[in-house]
Image 1 (spheres, rainbow, N blue to C red):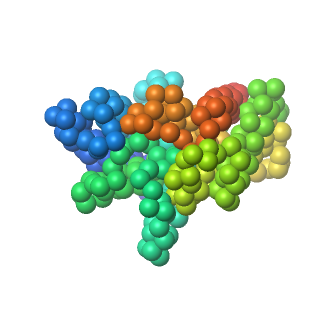
Image 2 (cartoon, rainbow, N blue to C red):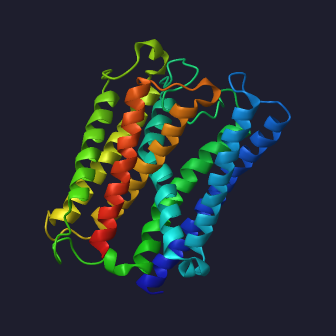
Length: 315
């Protein structure tokens, strides 16, 4: 078996693994929608909020299953580039940057560390309201997130490199530097957000609402640390691509990091902005509402600017 065939085999296995893992998450969400229609759900959620929120995640997880299959199977190479790139960008942005957080939270949990400090909900949570879940739901959700994240982290770069090899082969110093005002603005915004989230991860409280101290917990700090590292990685990667430094670095490194980081900035902040604006189940962020809105709007813009720089670098 040649090197190319070996990588294709790895891509197929990882894609099937991602699809299978996300199917577990999908099964839980379908059950939650079904029971919600009969009036069952968390006490702090209205029936409509619970059903709508989980219906949205049903659509998202079903799309994730389809994405995993597309990355694994031959017909995925024939799909139109635009939808494949968009759903890959958003899906990978949601899940892959969460891997450091998952590893840290599991490790601390095994050591007996209380991540949520006994709080009922976290300021960065998705609002699932699943604090008292049966064991099988917890396992399915955990495996769904972790398995899909690992599968996408492996399958997606191989798929992208096989389909668009010129974007990933060679070294950073080859060719002109496609710098632009938009790319510079995206780098500055992403770096600023990365520093802000890192400051919050280290225990800083500037911008937080004192009335929601129950949202200031170790779990939130870990999430901010993961987001901060991702934003800084995205800023560095696009700066590297647009300034061709450090020269001779392999092209696939900043391209892959920038693609995933920009997707994370866009996807998570789009989700959180909707949570702040619509407040399902009485959701409130740990930050002041105005700070949260500005933070997520800037993050969405930074993600779009960075991915635009990635596309221009490829062209």
